[in-house]
Length: 185
Length: 185
Image (cartoon, rainbow over all chains, first blue to last red):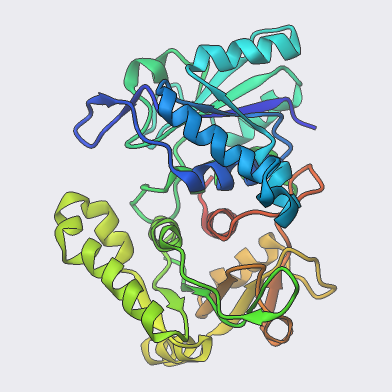
């Protein structure tokens, strides 16, 4: 199984004007990304928000599906949402991984723009096979804020199809990227 | 550009007991799948439901983003949601494609189970490159109903990762399958 962790962060991300914001949590992000994480053998899915009321909301949703009536109604959903841990910051998530792995993870970010230093999927698939822990970070809203992108250990290539349009939802992008990195064909 | 059309159907699909139902439309399916369709050069995205009130709801949502205040707020969203056509049945969608292409499309379905006749992604990518029109059909709820699957021209392999779990959301599955068939690497 791969040694990969995923984070979805709500800060620091940008709005449509490029200003840094705290974005709000979207319920279906929890479901779709945890289900994709479970499918591709991701170890934990960190939901990152600094806002205490949003953390409480997320914990309430997770609890419904992991120990509430949702757990009995849909066990497959339960096993996916059990992968979610709520953290306030990306470094907190990375420190949690360090506790598990005894080594601080490398961070990997995704962006809709191509960087000169971007890493291709085939190349990063090979890096993952070495077995060191990596934390793949997705941004919400209009994407991760710039200083955070440049400071990551790896920036993955943008996802492109034949059309000149790349405005995928973060839910779609997460599924596609996990499939490119860990899918069996 | 590929000669591919996508449909998301709410009938005939099955519930968790395997009974055939009309499922309800999920707002984010419209957004996520139209954005993925636009990214991968899909010609039209058919939203299929037999229920008149659900058709009205979908048209209202589309209208908000294509000609309402949403169109000015987010032009990228507009160009994605413009791909959506509302139809009552899959044959109605196929007939619309026949009007456009002057040839009735082949149908392609996806399923979380492997069939003896399943087609692999590499193989179907080659078939698409010939240029004949194909309609790729996704089911909501617990998936497409059985007689409909067997009658399709092609059944694609289930999406698998390294884990023994394949309960992706239809939004994730649609993105991943379009990427496998049409993504540039």
